[in-house]
Image (tube, rainbow, N blue to C red):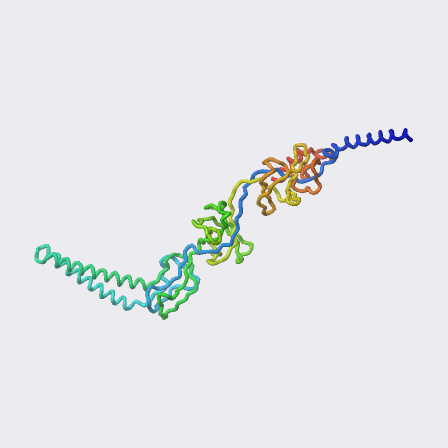
Length: 366
């Protein structure tokens, strides 16, 4: 019995030695696990700030009259596009035209009298004071003519700029007063969108930054504009600043007063990987990096923004690192992998070395 104990101890020692020799093979040898890999490279990325914006017309006015008068003619229809200076409403001007004729006659007579006195003054037949008095009379008569012409012009209401008219609010024969609304006029060939940005995100807002907007009126459609200006003041109540973006609106789809979901993008360079490559364990994130021999290691990373299936890597990786994108669930540190997209090195089914296979996979990912 005593002789058998050393023999048992010897067998146990030999078994442990065999396990130690097999451990390296288990970590780095054996069949390579097929995965999908990609090379980490810097690419264009952007910080995103979101908010709700209100559409405003580039130019907007509520048309009204300066005087109280009867509407003689209306030259537009609701929703019509008009050019700058186009007549919209003509008010009755009979009394003003008669007054203009009277003023023009008085001005002509005053001019003739001034010319006669000017000739006599040159011959020293009348005093200089008499001539100056007549000159003042002549100038007053001419001013009266210009005043009557202006009164007639006030009774011709024109579009101050090119745009689209709203719903017509007047009809011929109606008494139009200065407080009455004729119609609204908006220039919507280009529109502004004003939205609020939190004070903490102010450093990410710059003039010319790209802005994307979506509205409930046009589901599935996105409108692109650029930041035109940032307000000089921050609201002390909300701790937010108003940002104004400008949008081209050739089709007139964006209307004043419309509510839009706005996303502001500030472009920069960043390391971005497919979100599938990032493994989350509690609060920790890591990726599997592949070395030149096809062996993986677990690398802790700190992620930044995530969107559209991509994740920004703020810390942990460098440009040129090869990482595993698909197949992370069957990996552990130290195992050998091969890119599933790479062809076999030999007909017998032997896998190509991981380093070469990974290079082929990079071409597929590109």
